[in-house]
Image (cartoon, rainbow, N blue to C red):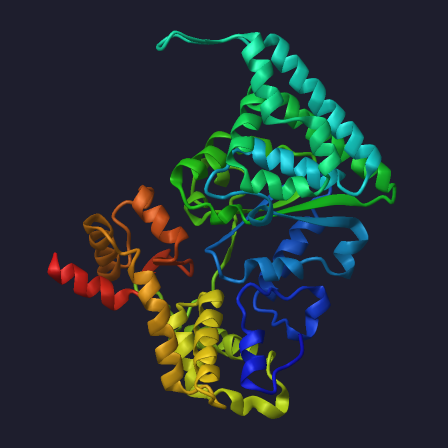
Length: 440
């Protein structure tokens, strides 16, 4: 990517699926540098805890994944091999189980070593065979029995180890898109979860021995914070969290905001780093120093502006007006991806109309176009009532309800963590919620 000199180039530079990496450092704005420094410090100075776990959280689109690409600096690289496991790329977050996470981590660890890959699949095959021979499940309430032969048949259909080995890294894509494969795989391995977990830990040890350079493994599990359904969030982070935290390596794990206050999580890591850029003062806990609070807000707004100008040639800043940027910042709610998406939609509109500058009116048209998509999700009386109550009070009625968690994960509700936690309705749907609530 090069810095834009035309409207078309600017539109292409605002495509939201592009995340700056180390190779694109000239486009990177260190939005969360202080937060990353705190994480690096904790990683570097907890060497006596080989299975040390750090949790981070943030709503989808807050810039967390981009920041994690820049976590490893020269000092950290001397002591750790940083491996990012992107759950969103490898797993279906709408249908996920702890077995999926463990298996995909094993695949990720072994994908570049034929020796480790053979050991991994051989051990999985052995676990599968032992499971098949001993499986005898009785469900007394339905009198259903699965005998050894039917279990073997299901196993063959579900997870054929040799064929997966021959497929190689394409297995990542197959597992994500094939629901039947996932279900049958879980059926085979869930009853042997402890064996799979022990296998992964032994592979971690072998992986570091193969490296043989004195460095430890730093595992960064990114993407799990985007799981939307309460059922899967509870399964991963309440019922099976120990299979993540007891992996024998230093870990940074992204978790949903709704899990950041759960006792299972806070008992392991009391201080959870939160990714969000607030653009307003806390209405529930007003700052003691208003001038300092406003300074922080202005700095955050400036970071948004820098993100835009990093993608534009220095001699072509007239491609977009400052009031257009300010409007996009206001309607973003502090969500970086939403900010970029608003500007992209506006810039495409200018390109379509053969214009040469993104104006305030273009941005207003852009966020209104996105608003129509968000409005469709405000589609039931319980959701409208919940959002309207939160809009008026900056607090949820029930912060662990399925409706509220889904609203957090889908960005209908935005969460802020400065001082006392507070919430607001996404600016894109705030007016819609107000209109619908009056009708109710």
